[in-house]
Amino acid sequence: MKHQLRVVALAAITTLACAPTAQAVDFTRIGTEDAFRSYIADRTLVDEFGGTRVFAANGGIGGQQDRATVSGGWVWNNGALCHRTRLNGLEVELDCKYLYMRGNIVVMQQKRGRSTEESWTLR
Image (cartoon, rainbow, N blue to C red):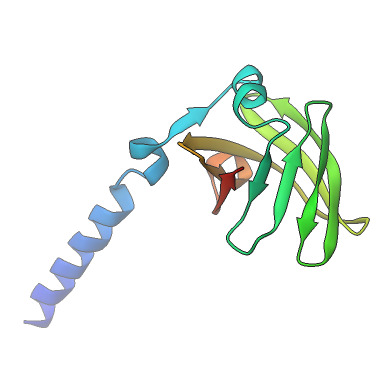
């Protein structure tokens, strides 16, 4: 009986590990700088906690996170949004993210799609 449970558990884990991510199924990848500029640049993104980001068309970043001021800069590189973000002047992130979009939801997948995701709502 224990062996059967292990086999079933292993099969379930394998199925989950091989399942496509939400981005691959429901979301459209933003893979070019032109698409990024058309859909996201100069618009406010809001996270689940009320934090904001604006990726300005001129390459700057602005916004608020908790009570801190967000600043920084971005460039488009090989299909990814690469940015340096600061909170109250202290660098907190340097990363290149793949972007996906469905309606007014934007998902950013860190480390060029190899790490965690964060969801934002476009305003």
